[in-house]
Length: 485
Ligand code: GLN
Image (tube, rainbow, N blue to C red; front, side, top):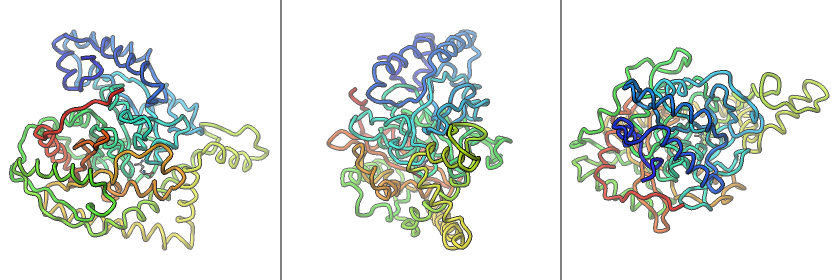
């Protein structure tokens, strides 16, 4: 088997026993990239030269027996995370040539753990979107069907993992952007609890919702990545100083007697019948392992989209005010005055979806409207959070579909923003509630498109969130497939 197809844990073993070197693995990853990128386009920027050096350095450490948990493992980074000396575009014209002078904390942590950096992955502009179609740098294709979207906004990160163009990647999730593309590309994606992972060096979209998390080939790899990136950081005041457990250690425990809540609000009309059937099979598998599945209710679910699409754009309009052509990034060359330069820079630097969000957000924060929109949305958000608190007094984890349908066709929803927004119906709630969520593969449609099941848990209960899917993954009859590229 080509080394690029391995998981992190398989590779760790092969590197340790000397049957593979990081240089060989890294080379096989770039060979794969060279043969595929024209069709898949998962990356915006590749860093092959630096990666080759990192791999050689890693091999020395491994030979000396002093490597870290990720030493020599090729990993890709979503282009919204700052990387020192490597341009970080956020998929936008306005940051097309922006080269950060520092690393995001998660990037530094991966470096400390020994990772090799493959490149920066494609994304919807400023992470606003569900399909990676709003990127300034072209569309990423779903490796399972090149006429379909890979999901978004971390579509490049998910496609790169699914197509074996890296071992694992980092994504960000403000309303589903890790879990949704993971589901559509047939891989695992975890959004941690708000505060679990430092966001220092992540270009902010909506600060009360944003989280960084891993996209991986299986649950064990997800635990390995979580071990590497979790923890308190004095540079991010919202990161929480609670102890980080060993996420990998919990994977082998069984789930006999555990309770899995099934919220009826997520099994509504509009869920594709093939998705429904795969989810039902997953539920049966869990019951077969001794878990007890019971009905729970998250009664304010129907307000999630409306609430999210006030809060996220409001915070975005404030966060994106810094892109004014003065301090960094693109500046329109022909401004006649300072104000004119601002206007021209922002009108031509941002794409249509980003401008739409800035306008919605500015409107809902403006005096006279604030109480009716932002304040109201914040109050409803508290009710949504209460729903989860109540549900988790009855069950260990909640199980839902990750998406209502499998990957849709490129272009299908681009002219209808509301349809695009509705697609995130099952993933927004965890961000509003601040709880963690994971999507794991649970089936394929007749046409061969992957289907994901989502698990959610209480705040800082990532162990449960890995343990249940891990038991499921090990015991389900689902065959392991790879896209045929
Ligand atoms: N699709 C949602 C949006 O466009 C969520 C994006 C995200 O999680 N970054 O806002």
